[in-house]
Amino acid sequence: LEHPARTAAADLTLRRGAARVLLDNWTGTSTVPSRTLYPHQWSWDSAFIAIGLRHLSARRAQRELESLFAAQWGDGRVPHIVFNSSVPDGAYFPSPDFWRTSTAGREAGAPRARETSGIVQPPVHALAAWLTHRANPRESRRRGFLPRLYPKLVAWHDYLLTARDLGGGGLTAVVHPWEPGMDNSPCWDASLARVTPADPAGFRRADLDHGHPADRPTDLDYGRYVRLAVDYRDAGYDDRAARHPFALEDPCVNALLAAGERALAEIAAYLGEDATVHAARADRITEALVARLWDDEAGVFLARDLVGDTLVGERSVAGLVPLLVPGLPDAIVDRLVATLDSPAFRTDRTALVPSYDLTGPAFDRTRYWRGPAWFNTAWLIERGLRAHGRHRHANRIRTAILETAGASGFAEYVDPTTGEGRGARAFSWTAALTLDLLS
Ligand code: 9WN
Image (cartoon, rainbow, N blue to C red; front, side):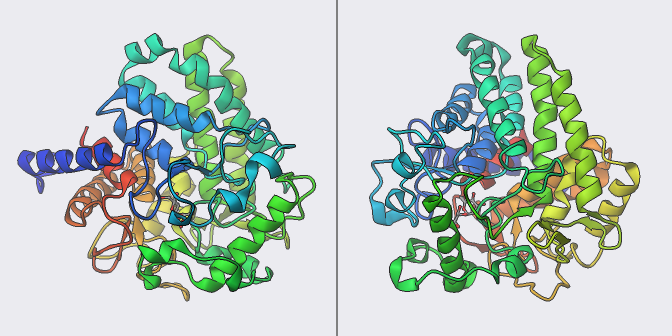
């Protein structure tokens, strides 16, 4: 009744296709985002994947998160990639011999027996853990899932809110464009312009073996990504010692942290631990998000560049994701919904939200995070709209996710003006979040 355009038969076919992707991409302990482009374990991918996988196998979904947290560092950080040692070095760049975390990250508590990256990704994990638990509380209890994971989730959030509160305003900062998970967003352009790119002769991009150059970041972007990562590595991944020429507060990352603290409050209450500390933290992050990143004129949250202490005047999907945060002031929710409905973020072709302002100067309909619509951000916004009672808007996005995921073969992202798939196919979080919306 809610979605008259879709039939039960279409949903069943879609569910089977999504399940197939997740089964094919499972390695035995975790799920690769893509067999071709991303043959290791990624941090926020694993969280989204668990959210879908819980409907197929609660046990696998738990293991997805457990395998990621098994590579957590002593200082609490959860690395953005956990490398699979059986995959050849040349299959993905940058590989373990670039990050060298088991040696360079020793002071910061990097695992000695595993290779990982040294940077982080958005904290979707507490939410994923709570949703995974709720999918099958008996299996969760039997395996002691939450009692084992809870202290690790707390240490992870502690890292983000202490070592990474570089602005001192109660928000967490990203120090590399790979950290917010939206690598080449126009929001980073001005900050990245200050970074001297590394010599392109010093590295080889494996992504171009599988991805079309027009759909991927440029060589100049990569030169800067490499420079920032090498400098961080050479500072021992120590946030006090590192210079951090690139340091920003991102609204999507901080919204996920606030939502994550709400999830931790639920987990703590369930375990009989003190839930009030998490609820208070969620309130504080929400207040800081509004005070430091809300721009009423732009109608979205903006990133704050901590080097110049200025808001970045580019509107991206990251600025709409705070819809996910419970307790956001009503006036801001109204304004965000109006922005979603405006020509900047709404197309006739697909209700999937573009990653960047359709009317903005840097808009590019195929290039990765500079315009294409992604399924994870659409899912987060759908969830946020629903939580704020905006069911009509939420339904429109839900239908678009289902239609576009199926039609594109579970694409990594799509051209928002045509709905055409771009990037990898059989992409795990696209399949996982489709499955979640169907369940
Ligand atoms: C770098 C795995 C990851 C996602 C990111 C997405 C892309 C990597 C890359 O793929 O980034 O981390 O090589 O381009 O931008 O959000 O987690 O799916």
